[in-house]
Length: 185
Image 1 (cartoon, rainbow, N blue to C red):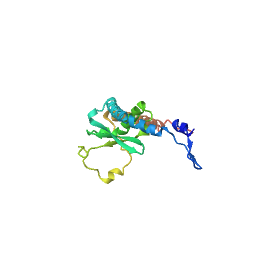
Image 2: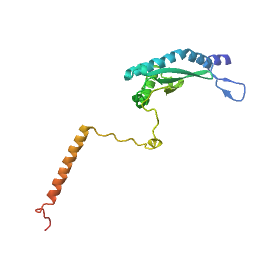
Image 3: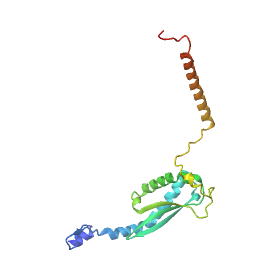
Image 4: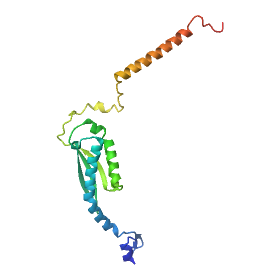
């Protein structure tokens, strides 16, 4: 009976006071996982290239690399996105790109979060950037975003609206101050 329970994944008594469920297919699952490793690597590479293409980002700008991390009987993956071309927009939209990439991966494999441990961005040590030096430490203290300056057409609209409001206010003031407006006398 114990052999049948082991073969079909049922729990069995360990012989002691406590019983612990043991599933016979755990070794089988580890083998299946190892067999799926090349497929999952290719899934990460293809989905990264497709997401880059769908987002309009040149594929040569980001190189997907898959890193393997064995833990016990399982092997987990990390997707490293190596930035090969500097563009400030990559940093600005990195989280949005990563979110879309993860949804594309999960669309193909809904259990991806069980085996994909991280998506990391990597900049080679010799990466050229327009910001070769860090700003002064005080630059990081200003946590509030700076307001964006108005464009010329927006400034004209604001000036026009302000002029109309001031004209209405002035008309109202002159009407209430006129000598013919004597109340209660």
